[in-house]
Image 1 (cartoon, rainbow, N blue to C red):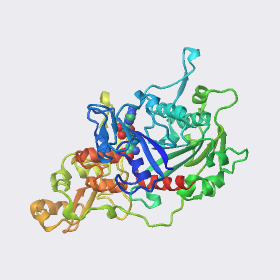
Image 2 (spheres, rainbow, N blue to C red; image 1 turned 90 degrees about the vertical axis):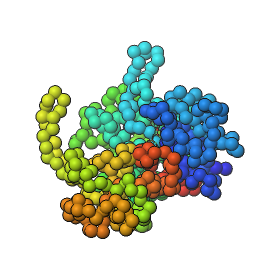
Image 3 (tube, helix red, strand yellow; image 1 turned 180 degrees about the horizontal axis):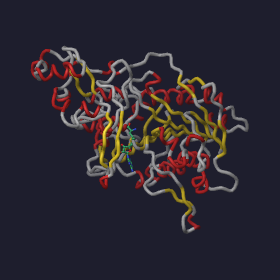
Length: 464
Ligand SMILES: C[S@@+](CC[C@H](N)C(=O)[O-])C[C@H]1O[C@@H](n2cnc3c(N)ncnc32)[C@H](O)[C@@H]1O
């Protein structure tokens, strides 16, 4: 029997690809997504949902419906609706709830009307996840977030994560977490995210972690689910830090109000990159990745030059113009004008330009697409074909001047990354997002995850 999965904040389906494999491929049958939910609040057209339903062959239940079904299997649903508007009864029974969601303010306040109890901020998506876990009680929950979650907010480092852990503890879950940088486990992109894996009563992980004596170091470095999927060294000088979440008589609002209010030395969060939580207590420790396999690098994902469309080549003007590539990628020390005419000095270091091909790539961000120059978009050097040189006049004087300026060889030129290369950096199948505009495709990849990470989670979860 496969584990039944509900995929929240599904985007273009990164979790599903990691758990099930590419659409239409022979599944090994350990996981089966029975419902996905995706709704983009900022646009009317639902670009990511369009990609998802197309890739997995789903069709609207009726004309104009937000519910999509599979024409042959009735256990493959997709809902293109704001998750906060989705009634629990529409969410099928499942064993594993997954999702990558935004880092927002998770603080809890007591309501003015005491009888109503406690209240989190409106529109904060953690409370939607919480509502679903509470009602559906899946065996496991796997969530992804930016690592800032462990340290936010700045004035009360770690409060949001503490509230989240306390909520999961109250619902009877034990939790493991780890900050994982995909590149440190041989994947082609440096992308650092925190993965939070919760287990319900009745699972093996819950049985072990809810014992009276928990061997946190052993679990975090050897036998834990995450430790099995992502081996680590323990950082020698780092002691395990242990703390209770709620104190006697406290509720979530009290925890939210007081957690780390005084601040630790250096304004640090108590949460290190690895940890576990069980029965209102957490243990946390700094670990370092241990990986002996092959490291993938940026050059591994590049298309052969002949396959790169002309619009990805950088133009000579875009390099040297005001606020062009040269300026934006470069180091700067300048005066800037704030609102109200306030003048401040602005400094930043230079970016490696073009990007290093012999290392994993930098993180893809949502603004990666489009031809306008940017500090954060990737630019690579490559050897254009004869045809491209001729067509784009790459042997002109202006081009040679730029080559001199940026220390490029005569045979080389520079370009942005294509949508397929961005997909490869997240280990998606080539052309998974085909059909959307190139800048939307880049946006999807800036939002998505490296699916090799989910594949590793899938392996250990299936084994257990
Ligand atoms: C960080 S992305 C997750 C991307 C996904 N893991 C993937 O592989 O593509 C978060 C997603 O949540 C969606 N989203 C934001 N607010 C939502 C809401 N209220 N209801 C449902 N989905 C929402 C966004 O459109 C975005 O696609």
